Length: 202
Length: 164
Image (cartoon, rainbow over all chains, first blue to last red; front, top):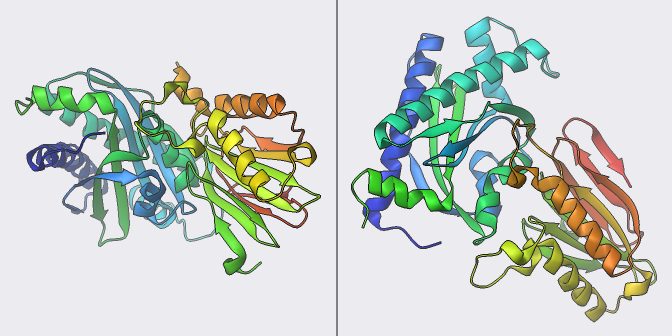
């Protein structure tokens, strides 16, 4: 995988910014509370370190995963730690999740739907911005170790090296109580198309 | 088990252990944790295999530990160099899950089962018996393999801890 120029990294940051910005707005409307967003990070991350971004390979997370096909293809993850998932359920559905234990079908379904809404606004704003088709699969949800979940999105990079390009955005809602992460991992051959469509391609 | 006797095996990585040391790899999803044990010489090996075959490799220098068809020969040569004998080895496997059930699944998304098939085919090629496996499903696993008796401990979020 070749290294990107600084301006190309900036373009990818903007890509993350637009997607997550729209998703944060959607979440803010859902919660009826302000939602803050960090500056996106774009970097080539060694496989081993990808899960460290959300607390390590064994950190239990709720993950909503979408495979994106079309002119731009890739994998999109929306990740929440359990504490944040509980915060979301309380904020949205007034479900008291202080009690320890698993999630009911209703709760998982609600989280999946939230993930669906947020990733949907992420991707549709992105497709509008880039002007290329991006068709997402039906979102799949998992409650499992971050390492196990995220490695699923790294396979396309596996055949080329030991690192993947990650466009990462974090948002915070409800006085930092809810922390969500978007990981967009475009397929290696998508970058050229993105740059070209945005007029920065060579 | 104290942490200073644990040797960590990363993603697309492999290592060997003996003298009471353990091997550990965390967060196996569709990857396969392949372990080999020579009970006579008490030498254990573990590989965290990510992809089924190196035929698809497009990298300049191949990371041997990443592909099932290259990781197993490499692990065997590391273990025999340490004094193990291939004929007394036994294999145990864990991982190879399908983390997300998706409709209209492309082949690349079926990677877990393909990793397992490829590992089993390689073990068959070297005539190494598979004595136990905990593969498939839709959940992640963390595994630890000790080099005294070759016991593989598997931990998952949903099902807790078990030994094979």
